[in-house]
Image 1 (cartoon, helix red, strand yellow):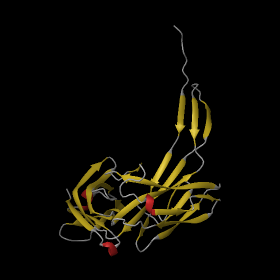
Image 2: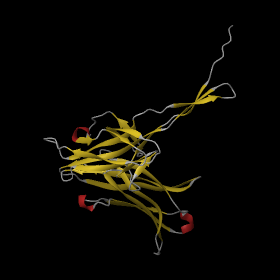
Image 3: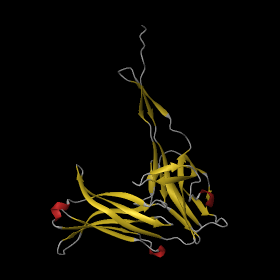
Image 4: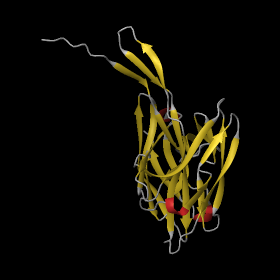
Length: 279
């Protein structure tokens, strides 16, 4: 019987990182060498165009390709790319210029995105995502031969930054509520979990505050906060988990109040609340 020696190839590191800048915790968002601001664009019948600022903070010139894609959100809030031209897609409503840019180290550039109203477009919200992808693919770096005879291959990281572009046309409205709120504890500490319900023909996006209110009054304590959390249309629900900054048991008797508040009151802002009794 012949003996065969099988070579082993170890892939040390390859990554394609996608950032869906759906929750703007800051004024700008970046991954790797590219910084993008704003992290979300909302266009409509009154505001038909917007500028987006790109900044190359690396020490090398980088060429980026700009592409409009469609993405969907899971019930847990995870984003994934889907087939282009899905229901409520904004791909055919948006115009982008330029489509490719070369940024020198430390250089910034503005790009323009515009909403082109299509005749007979039904009222509602349309959404796609703008992706910024390095044109050159990750280059393998020879990791050398290991002591056990295997071959190690290293890959450079290529990152793709994405931001949502929302178009609202005609009459749009939404309602929201919170249910199934509960307090949990694991090895990493305490957290609350709840479901945000959305209905209507637009997405909702708001700030979450978790506040402990002592029994019999007294000063309330904020124990958790999330800014700019979205529930994208057409999703009806999103399950949210928020880690608490303090041990509830040490705060004594009281209740935990959860609030979801949209900051934009001009569009019929949603304010939803739920309460958990502390143990």
